[in-house]
Image (tube, rainbow, N blue to C red; front, side):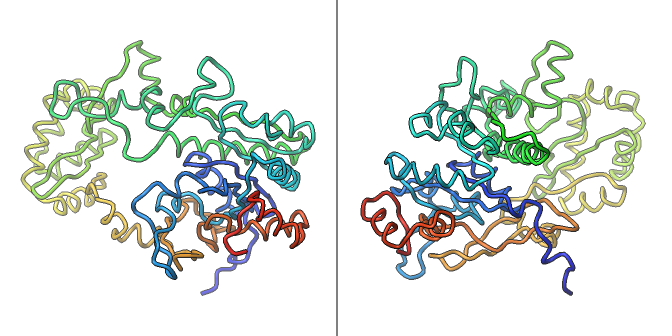
Length: 419
C-alpha cells in the first residue's frame, strides 16, 4: 500500500552541504545529513579521493572490467553524496571550491587546525564573505588547547579519552588489559554530535542569527560519552576499572556461557532479578538477603556471578531466551554479524539496503536507524565513484561551460569519471 508520506519533503530538503571531510567522523556526519534530505557535495582529491576508498579488502568490483573499485569501508559512510574531484592545491581548484561554498548552507571539514587558511577556505575567511554559512570543523582535539595541532585518530582517542580503560577483562585475568571497541566509536559519535550541532546551527541561522563555527573535538566527544563511568569517578574520586563483560553499577548485567554459546542477561531492577530467579527454578536466589537490591548485588558480585554462571551453563541459548522472555527479563544471544542481518527483528525493520553504484551495479548498505512517521527516509542513491558528479555540479551550480570543463580536466584541476 502506498505510504501517504512517500513523497513528503525530507526534513533537510533544500539544504546544501559542502563536504570537505574524509575517513569516518566527518563522512558519518554528512551521510546523516544526506539521509535527512540535504544535498551533499563531497570534495575529493582527484588523485585517489577519500582515503577510505583504498582501505580494504574487501572491495567491490567494477562489473564491466572486473577490477577492484572502492573499499567497503568507503561505502559505509558516503551514500547519497555527489563526488566532485577538485585539486584545492591549485589556484583554479580552490577558486572553484570557494564558489561552491557560496552556493551552500553548510561546510564541513576535518583538516588539521589552520591548514585551510592558505587556501582561503578557513572559517574566518569564509565567514567574512559568507556570514550565513554554517561551518563545522571536526578534529582530534578541537580548535584550541595544547593538543590542537596534533593529529587524532579513533584508536588514539579511545585510549586518551578513557574508553579503553573501562573496556576489556580485568588486569590479572586471562586476556586482561585494555581493549578498543570493535568499531570506531569515537569517530562515529563525533559524526553524530556534528550532525546534531549542524541542524541546531541551521535553526539558529534561520531564526536570523547568521552562520557560526562549530568546533567538534573527538577527545571532547569521547570524554562526554563516558556517561555513568565519568560520573562514577567525579562522584567518588575513584577511577573505574575494567570489568570485562560486567557492568559497574548493575549485576547481573553481562555475558554468560550457555551450553551452546554465549548470551547476554541484562537484569535492570530488583523485580526483574526475582523473576529471573523464578525462571531459573531458583527462587531462593531472588530472596537471598545478599542479593535483594542492586547495590547489594554489586557488593556481592563475586558470589552471585559464579552461581548464575553454573546454572546458565546447563541449558541452551534458545532455552534461556525463551525462559526469560516469558517473564519479561531481557536476554539474548551474542550474534556474529551474519546472524545480526539474519535476525527476524533486524530484517523486519529493513536494516539491509541495496543501492545503485555506477561501477558495481549495486552495493549493499545499512539503513539509517532514524524512523520518522511523517518524513520517512528515502534511499535513492548509493555511494559515488570518484569524480562521478564533478562536471554536473559545476555546470548546475557555477554555470561552467563545456570548454572550461575540458580545460580544467586537461590541466588536472578536476576529474570526472564520465567525461
